[in-house]
Image (cartoon, rainbow, N blue to C red; front, side, top):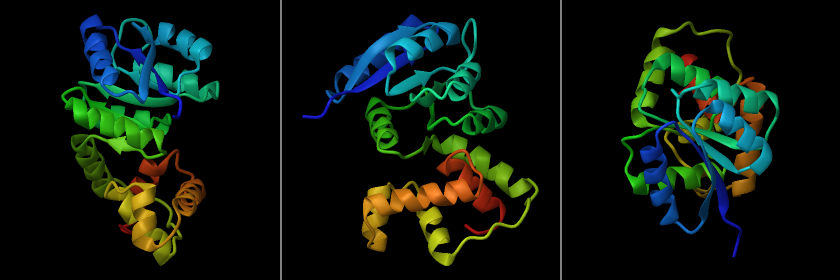
Length: 211
């Protein structure tokens, strides 16, 4: 049996933290190892506990969520960052993506869907709430195209499936590739596009009209 995924909760509302903890308790593969009320406390616990994943609110007393994400990124801490918030803002979403977050989830999410999203993130995927995706697509369609990108038809096919929310395993089965090969190719595409993560890579490809 594999070890549980260790999760840190960072939210200034105790009731919210209790609710999230209760949802995660129902899934034996997750373990809540700590709770913080703000970004400052959150950073201290990320440093000391080294959780696999941190669920982070956007607006909190003390340092806010993006500031915490920036500190985690700058210190190259291995914790995957997931925003769990009630705020839906194009600027906030873009900021968080550029800071390397692996998920942007709204607090209205059902418990089952939250668990499914966390499972995808632990397996290397990125997750955006559909409403966040819609805002980003509007920005993609209205923003400047930027320098041309060079992607092969095969790479475009992979990114198109990523944009549709397919996992690496699902993409591999569809394209007759191993999950490891798909992950390597997605990482290579992301690196060559100079994107922070696969979500930003999809955004850049959309802006070029490739998807």
